[in-house]
Image 1: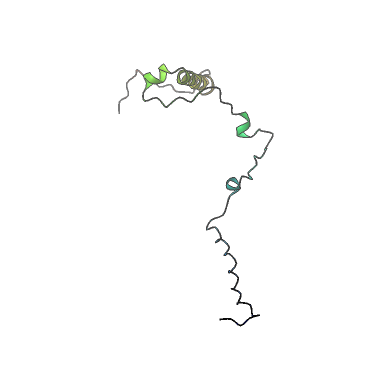
Image 2: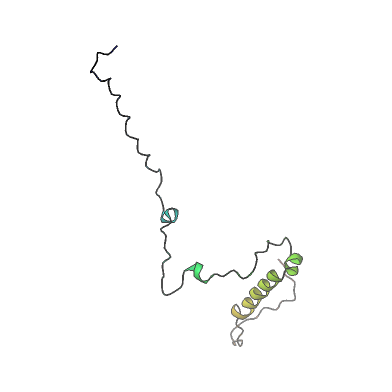
Length: 108
């Protein structure tokens, strides 16, 4: 038993918490949420001009199902028109140019 007037021994304080280990790879600004879009050459950020006007349709399995979907049909028409308008430019044939006749058959 302890003699009167003596205080019991004080327990040692717990050790301070161990700091977490350093991450094994760098933390990006995207992960921390501090990523800001950069305005280059006056173009808006990609998310600023993208608007959702309709629901997303699944990728069709074949050509007929793509034609049955109005969104896919409109997208195909836009792509086709872009090919027609911006891909080929027909001009007059020069006297030195040689043209190859094609009857729909290719002989290899």
